[in-house]
Every structure is written in C-alpha cells, then in structure tokens.
Image 1 (cartoon, rainbow, N blue to C red):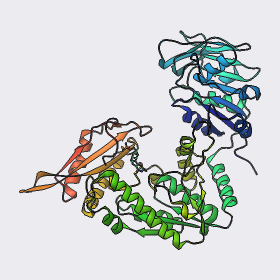
Image 2 (image 1 turned 135 degrees about the vertical axis):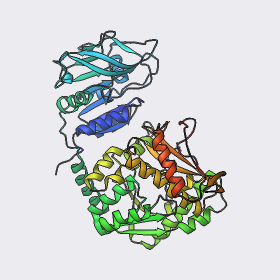
Image 3 (image 1 turned 90 degrees about the horizontal axis):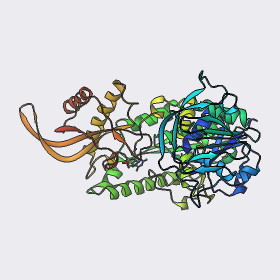
Image 4 (image 1 turned 180 degrees about the horizontal axis):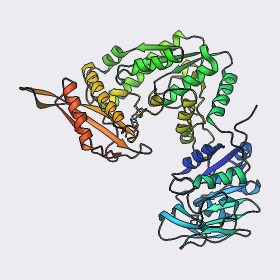
Length: 519
Ligand code: XMP
C-alpha cells in the first residue's frame, strides 16, 4: 500500500509568523511535512527521515551571540536544504559565509532578477527573469560560503538568493510561502519535488483513505465515543470515523440550549438522518439554564457551562460502557502549539475550551484522526467525505455558545430573542454575498433597557449589537466596514420581526483593544 507520509519534508522553525504557512504550501503541493523547533534533538530528526529540509524565517539576528542555529545534523545528512530569510542567513553563517546586520528591517514588495538556469527557479513564467517578491528581513548575506553563488539580486541587495547546486543547498532572502510573492508555490514545488525528489501523494483522497486505514488499525473492533458539537473539526471526525468503523462509533451531541437557531436539528439532520451516524442528542437546555440562573460573571458562566458539559457527557458515556476510545478533533496547530521547544512531548490532550478536558477516570484511550492536519486540510477532507459546504465553511462559534453572547444573566427569553436577531443578520450576510468576506459575524444581547416607540406606544426594551470582524488568525481583528444600506436593512428587519427589542447597534471596535466576543 502507498505510504503517503513516506516522502516528507522537515521544516525547522526559527519563530517566523509564516512557518505554518510554509507547511501549508508544501502540503498544498502534495507533499507531507512536519514542523519542529530549531533546537529539536538530532535523534528525532534522524528518526523523522525527511527527503529535504526547510529552514524557516525568524525574528532574531544571526549577528548576535546566541542566535538560534540549525542543528549540524542537517549539514551532515546530505539532504537538500532551503533556507528562507533567517534560514538563509543562518545557513550562510554556519557554513562560514558573512552576514551583516542592517540598521533597519526591510518589509514589503521588492523585485528580484533571478538566474533562470538554477533548478530553484525552473518553470517560472517571467520573461524578463524578474519576479515581485515579499521581503521581511533585517540582516543580509554579504559574503557567500564556499561553493555558493548568487542566483538572484535586487537593486539594493546583490545576494537575494544563493545556491550550492552540488550539495542542493538553497537560500532565499524573500518569502516564497506568502501570496505576495509571485509564483512562490512554483519555487517551493521546484524544491520539494524536483530538488528533493518527493512524489505528490498528499491529496484529500489519499489522506481520507490513509486515515480510515489507520483508525481501523488503531481501534480494531472496539467502540468509540465522540463529543459532536457541530463545529468543523468534530464534524469531520464524525464523518471520517463513520466511514472507518460505522456502528462502532457513538456520537454524543449535547444540546445546551445555547446554540444558534435550529442548529440542533441541523446537526441531527446532517449526521443522523443523512449520513446514518449513530448520534445521541441530549436535550439539556433546562439543566444549563438552571445552572446559569442568577449568574452574570462571564468567567463563572464559562465554568458552569464547561463543568456541566462534562457532567452531561459523562452520564452518556456511562451508558456506553463498551466504549474504550474517546475521539477528539485535535488538529495540527494544536499539536505544534502544545509541543514545547525540544521537549518532544507533543501529545497532550487538547484542553479544548469547549470541553474543558475530560476527567481521567473515564479511562478512555484517545483517537485523534486529525492530529496531522491543518484547518484547510480538515475542510478539504470534509468535502471529500461529502459534508455540506455550509457546515465546513461556517464562522467559528464559541463552545459556551450564546452563554458568552448574552451579557449578564442568561435566560431562555434572551436566548430566544438573540437567536432570531442573529439568524436574520446571518441570513442577510449570505443573501448579500458578504458572509465569506467577513471572518466572523454574530449578534450580542445587551441587557440594558432603552426607550423606543412601536406604533404609538413607548417601549422600554433591551438592545442588540451586531458584530462582524475581518481577521486571519483571530488574535487581532478589524471591524468589518459593512455597507450602510446593508446594515440599515438588517436593522429594519430585526426591529420589525423580533419582538422585545428597542434598538440595534453596530460594534466598531477593533481587537485589540476589544475582543471579538463581548462576554
Ligand atoms: P476573543 O473574544 O477572545 O475570541 O477575541 C477569539 C476567537 O475565539 C472564539 N472563542 C472561543 N472559541 N471556545 C471556543 O471554541 C470558547 O470558549 C471561545 N471563546 C472565544 C471567538 O468566537 C473568536 O473566534
């Protein structure tokens, strides 16, 4: 059987904001790769047995004492190496070239003139041998190590890329992984496919097949339990495990009464009705609302919701006594983030803020079929498994659900009002083709009362705020400049169709200083 991991690339991380992007691009090309911290133990690298190595960029300067260095193992291994930005500089410095610090960091677009005979620049369509690239660096290589020659220059940098073709060592001062660099993907493909000799085996179809085989091998005829939330990761795990082990899988879907409009029914329809997955729906709305009675503190609300989730989930698990495994939707970025530098201990249970970590006494072994995948790959295999596009590309939704979107005490009445307002907002974003342009959008229930007039009567009712943000990583975000006429239309609909509200406002706060959720 074809081993889709067999042809693989090692990425050593020096701390660049783009390291995960390098990995995603290489996988997009169809080649498996993993990211390790630059100071990982050499035995682990030898064990990983890659066909080539990429050294990422990083924020440090190689000219400083104690600057991070690539392990000497890679230069002794005989493997092809591509250094990107800091990776190029440390390669140059470690191989006895010279690197000089520059007083200011250079960011942004630049044009390189490249040497078309270099295998790194093969298959490019650039008639003038010029490419627009994205630079972000402080230092530059001023003297090449022995055996190297320059393969690209800019008007201000004579060594914008370097190569020692005999050893298959390459360095680029710019970032081929970002989309601002023209034909960066071709350049990366030249390296991983032509220079390192990797076959393109990493495709959605092959990943699904390999994951099915591996899950079957791992769990045998045991039964598996999965907490299904309706989010992308747990949904893809459910669909994948269903294909792999069918009836051996039991999903528990806890309806906590804090979901979006009709969400519970949609989850049941997608999984139980359409795919034939065994799903136990636990209608726990009343228990959650009772537990939240009188509580306004956001942290306390989160705790209550998290603990009660575990309690409810455990009760269901007790009814599935034969289950030996717990499936989780841990994905590769969780694994990378929880792997401390050089600790080698990547395997931690996701302290999923939705689940809060399930207690050890459940004594279930973990099966995590998405551990190797980036979010975009999870979505792609979800498509391969025929999950609906709408589910796979839905905005993120917090585990505590409307519990963090109803300020103050959570009541059924507030949740019902909020669900209706939120649904109108989302419906309209979709209808106006704005849904995919924003990263996350929702309504928030504010318990402050404000005066309004309905018909001839004065009313005194709560307020709803609309929030829509644009972001890449959800760590920072800008508020979305939705068109005024669109906002006017949404506001009209909400005030006309949802009883019990006095006004609608639009949140124009960025993150930072505000967060995305209001809590
Ligand atoms: P903040 O509000 O911190 O949110 O700017 C950043 C992103 O995280 C989501 N979020 C959560 N997701 N469980 C989750 O799964 C949670 O408890 C949780 N709290 C916030 C939020 O929706 C946004 O996308």
